[in-house]
Length: 89
Image (tube, rainbow, N blue to C red; front, side, top):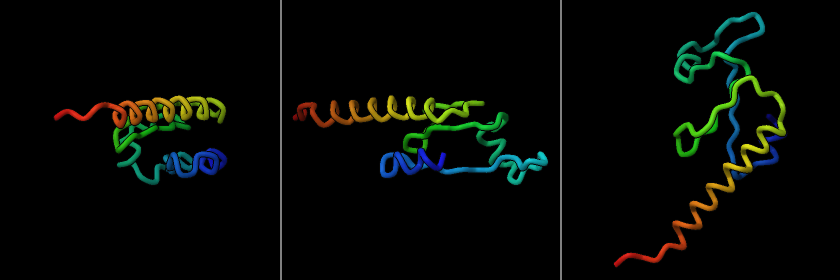
């Protein structure tokens, strides 16, 4: 995740939360429950505070890289379409 955070700096914010210690202690059960963190790892992609994708049990960074690129490309296309639309008077 640290490599992805550096690679996508300025385009994606990466935050890490430890849902469980190696001894199966849960440091913050409220957050674990709020985000349904049952599997480790669980990676959640948010756009403007709304969950848009979730990956469970994925450990290969190439999978995250592929999905992030797909998300960023779609978001750029939506932004372009919105900005290119003629103004309605």
